[in-house]
Length: 208
Image (cartoon, rainbow, N blue to C red; front, top):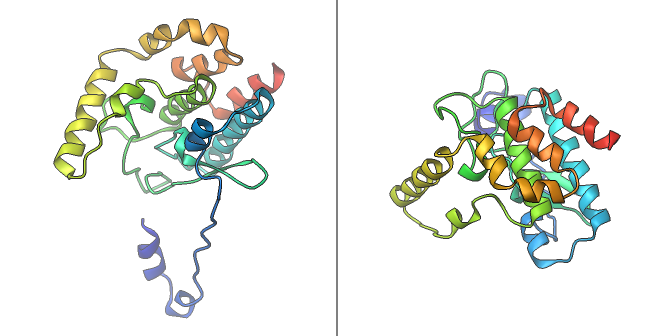
């Protein structure tokens, strides 16, 4: 359900009182911020935890983001993260509109609905993006197109490349990096389906 459809469905007495509060974050999105700024290990650890906490919160409300990536987090004035861009998200009775970029998407039949499990896989790719400094298969996102046909063809090619490898292959391709970076076990756990919930991943982080 879109916001406009929701508002239209309200009794007329409430429609004029509905407002949308859109905040402006001058630091922009996290992906851009990380590319243009030097990030300390302490700040990176803080963001790692906040990303995990954000997914715990939305899943507690039965919301599947469906398009998790570093670019979906915004940096506020206190350098805390705010998860945004819920235009593709899924909630009870309203299936998600997309399954995210190929680099963050759980290899599967893409006609299937998004789930907490597919969000967890994307969570692993988002955390990898944070600690490794770039997204998985970032070379696939070089070309940019304006027309819908070219965009859809590019998306199809990206999924074909990523789907030619299983999630274990993705883990294996980056195993040396995962062994070298802090909390690589959490990223690997998200990719390999070792966590049933984001709460389990957060719990492992807090115990480490």
